[in-house]
Length: 328
Image 1: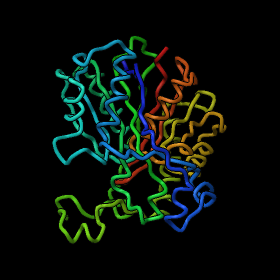
Image 2 (image 1 turned 90 degrees about the vertical axis):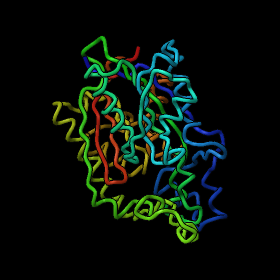
Image 3 (image 1 turned 60 degrees about the vertical axis):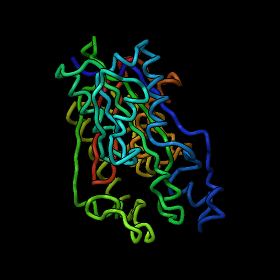
Image 4 (image 1 turned 180 degrees about the vertical axis):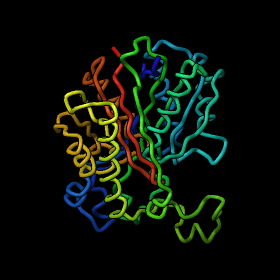
């Protein structure tokens, strides 16, 4: 039986930073940011770490299903902003929540992290290795973006989304198919210079501000437009789907123009595209699960709805997932 999402929740920090916040700090304006990205505001976590955003969302997932912490078998945390290099953020979440029967790990695939994690979690369920998996997509991007860099500071926000995966009782719903891709040559265009074993932290790397995300915006944009649109069309063709079969496209929220290009390639009308980039910016691994959570809690997802998830991120990594919604 396919793995199925049986609970979904999200957390975003309370502190809102509208575009006007950046006007006095950078050479930019609200109009410039809105027209080029679609972003109006974003949230920054002023105190705490990535795990502090995951835990409340994960607790809500357990509450939705009436489960105890001991009922969880595995925790997958998809992030590029872990609390620490080690132990894993998954281990930190396990400790904070008392998930005494769970094992888990962190997964690093940047903006495609949640799709990678969801596919991995589904494989664990479908192979009968585990019964219940928490798949968490979360990033505190404010911890790795340079407040003096207009090309990145305005784009990102902080947030977390969590889903609970269990085996479906109904073979017609759940995670049906996925296509995941990677091209390591893209690492030249979106990366962090220092902090790993290739270039460990020193006074010099800190002074040179080499611990922030660096992006060649135009190159990444062009690759994302093609990659996300192509893989979304590919999964439709692979599963013999038409636009009529899709209730929602839930795309990674990086740029409104990338989202629009993907929807056009799929033949979807704008009313079938979930967009919240205007409120949260790019929360990296958090975007797609936050979108799913908002759709569900707003009553816009119905049992059996065809949904396509699509992403593109650093690596390069990109992919799509086709699922039929299985929550009532």
